Image (cartoon, rainbow, N blue to C red; front, side, top):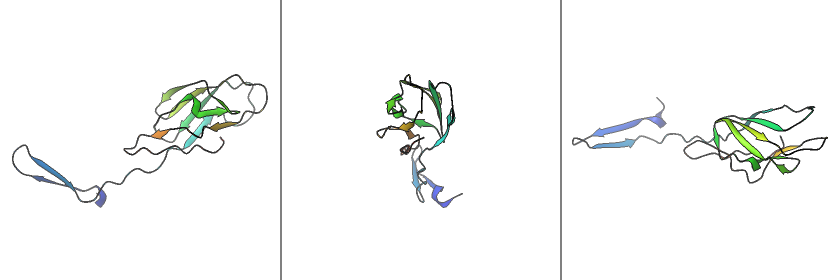
Length: 122
């Protein structure tokens, strides 16, 4: 058992329990990352949805968090706690650039949530 996870329980009077720790449990400090996106980069005939896979379960995902050519996605639905499908606005033929909104507030489920740092282009 790791020293940072040992607990000492002192029992006293009936129904009285004092819990103390010998060190604090390590806080989870690893932020969620982008694990996969579908369709993958390349040529597609149409692009109406994008499926995003995060490295762990996240919260706070909004349609406006994902941008295509500067326009916010029109809807988002969770498939699971770490997979989301974004519906995109109608796009003209040409290149589609996907980015994250600078004010996206996507966070993991840690006791002290870690913010997704999706600031670079996808």
